Length: 67
Image 1 (cartoon, rainbow, N blue to C red):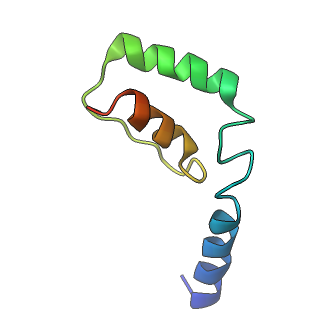
Image 2 (cartoon, one colour):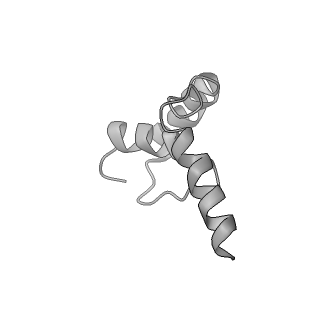
Image 3 (cartoon, rainbow, N blue to C red):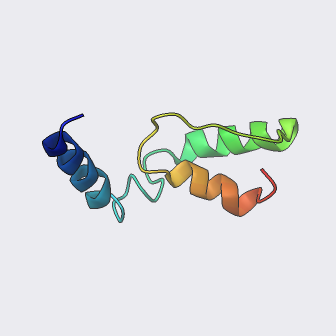
């Protein structure tokens, strides 16, 4: 990846750090469903691939610190 692409990508994700997207505003219903599934399954590990700025994983970490 060239340096210009890295700079643009970093700026994009850093710019969303305090956005509604980063706080889970758009995805709250999805989060409720996914968190209920995690509660049922109680996995030892979880992977989140290419899913934005990491707001969902922050929510998972707060609720299930053992994962």
